[in-house]
Amino acid sequence: MPEGPELHLASRFVSRVCAGVVFSGPVEKSEVSKNSEVPFTCDAYYITATSRGKEVRLTLTPIEEEGEPQARPAGKACQPMDIVFRFGMSGFFRFTAGSEMPKHTHLRFYTNETPQRALSFVDVRRFGSWEPNGDWQTDRGPCVMFEANVLSDRAFDKPICEAMLNQKYFNGIGNYLRAEILYRYAFMKARTVLDGLLPKKRELPEVKPEQGQCQPHQDSEMSLSKKIKVKMESPDILDLCHSMPMEVINMGGKGYDPEKPDDYSTFQAWLQCYCVPGMKSLRDHNGRTIWFQGDPGPLAPKVSKSPKAKRKGKKKGEDQTDKQGVKGEPPAKGIKKEKEGAQNKRVKSHSESKKTKENKRKGSRSSEGRKKQSKPERKGDAPGTTVVKRQRRRSMRTKSEKDS
DNA sequence: AAGTCATGTAAACCTTACCTGACTTA
Image (cartoon, rainbow, N blue to C red; front, side, top):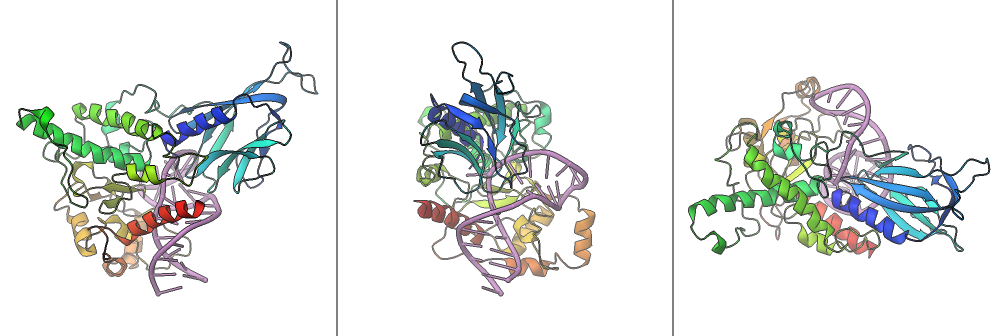
């Protein structure tokens, strides 16, 4: 689950397990990885790590012998090296016995002990990457957790929910943090509205509706313009972009612990919106699922006309546009809502691409297709829960159960 | 067996592709 907090926890993990441990020899890369080889070899070196947003930097530091730099066989001194990692969707570090090779390991650092141990970069989906002699990516903004963030107006050229995944402005925010931040932001704004009406604001009860209850965002009246540009809103969002990931970090490693990947229960309990039954979801224009409660209001994304998943072997004429609607509602209503924007002007479509128009002509995105893919709610689920949500949660649960 | 989804992002698009694995559906 690599978002900012997980990257930071990974850097802490590496620094902790590698403290005082002497590594030796070349860095080993899997054959299948398309990332570059790490041209570093040294008889004795230390590994430390730091993080910034969604990047982790390993520093390989040759150990000096009696104050002298180590000489390599060619006579050239070993030089320190930084390697900057991005974790993609599934990257993490493991520290294991050298004889134990975690599946999907793509980069390994061996200790000079007997028996050997190894630090491994594991990445099932291989979307992660590393850069030898690399530095923090220049087009990424300051770390939302540990650096001051000053947003330019351009960050608000798009709906905030889309801007939040832009690492140029919010380095470290990913999809689950987006959901949790926007969810809490909505209540923060609700609180603000009530504070203005009531004299004893400190005695206000926590504004929190019952699970599954759909509440419109209270700031929808304040900002119905097409884009959120209200500067005074940004401090709220900025605060949450810092405090939410810090909460995950401060879970004591229970949110995401490379040593205990089987215990997600604390983290799952922390989630109030992401993949939570009763919450609704939409696709943003990048095909990412955005989770929210009730009417998405001014926080809504532009809705993708062409969801990310145009999978291989997809049958012609098969529709995928159901995912664009508000899940958990009858599909016709969702689509109508999306097309007409009756209740929600921000849930709007992109202008159709040529390909989309072509597909429509071919009948590949007919409304019939949408109807066929709609799923009824199941008994026992909170209102608005869809099959997709059930699947996802089951998947998370099953994974933790299985791993344990 | 086929389809769908997933905590990300580069490249060239305004989406698509890159990947694997778990799960559901037919």
